[in-house]
Image 1 (spheres, rainbow, N blue to C red):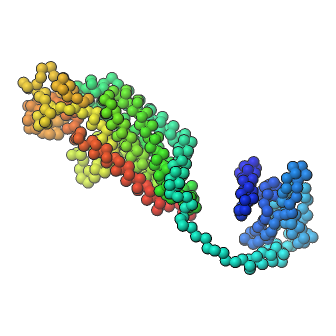
Image 2: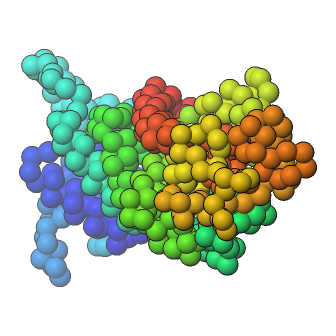
Image 3: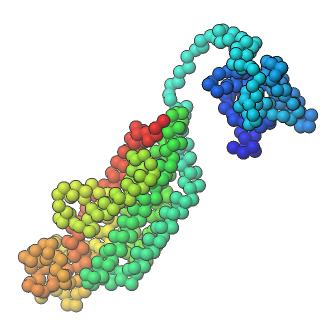
Length: 489
């Protein structure tokens, strides 16, 4: 500390001592003002040998400031009276702390051999006899026992932890500004890529694939940003956390509870920023219910991956290792999310990654409503509308004209035969009426759900699964910060 900060600390310590508390301080080369604030001194030389243990009085009043201070004359007298060869203290504003170090040969000047063995001199002094007398008459007091390891109740711990994390997040400008900036950039980047070809203009596979890719990127990368940027939040606080837990300041549950609660409004704010930019510019389904559904699913998806990042940070020793691990795992989650390879294309045992990937559940909960149509061109579906042959309504380009609702009701042709590849030629002929080289006609939703193997009715199940993942990641994080100690001392 600089001299000003040291004086402030000493004033606080003196105030606490004046209330009857005993305070022990370890100091290194204190100034005259700070040294004169202490009442007693225990001075040790190399090897832990006691050379002085007494008061620093008598108390003297300053002629200029009229404030009382400990003059350290008792200590100076002890050293000067040991041997005439011992240097004399000059007095005035000279620092007694520097004088005692010079006498012991531990000062900045050249060591002086004064022929005194200071530990033996202390043993012969009245201070030593007085200390031994006090120790001999110390009585064993009542054993102090506490009902709980923590001074505050669990409810107070939860409250103070939440308040503390809220303040830390508010002050952590780098963390939150980085998240906001990246989310704004990513949302603008992918939404502007499809601003000229929204869902209402999709009538072919090329436009659908472009729209599908941009919606996937806009959803997945917004959630992944939270996992990547949050790694340092727990990692950088580990050292302080271990000290506070060792001191019994709070329970690990209260520590994690505060972080869990404080992250939620920030994630909601980020999701609203993303939705306001991406959802609007990309011209996704404007119905109020689907907008709220999108916000809910994105909130749960972002929260899940954020808790995933913090879980990894709690499991590994350093923030650097956690960053490398999260980056690699995010890539794995992306690969096995079902976007690049549907379930049927993933071989065993790699299909296990698909089943346990939270990215799969986030995408399956968020994306299908943006391609859904309430009616279908597939004959085996209950809400069937003929889109091929003599039964097809004249001039049919969208099932909206047949009373369907949803953004994915435009009719398109399967030019590349992807549906036939997935389902087989017989199925296409039976359900879509397409024979030979004739392309099958079906809605955007029909094509999308068949090629991605998605079921609209399962979306809410995937939403609930995200809640389960978030809770599971938090439980693992709690166990990690409770039982794993990534420090060597």
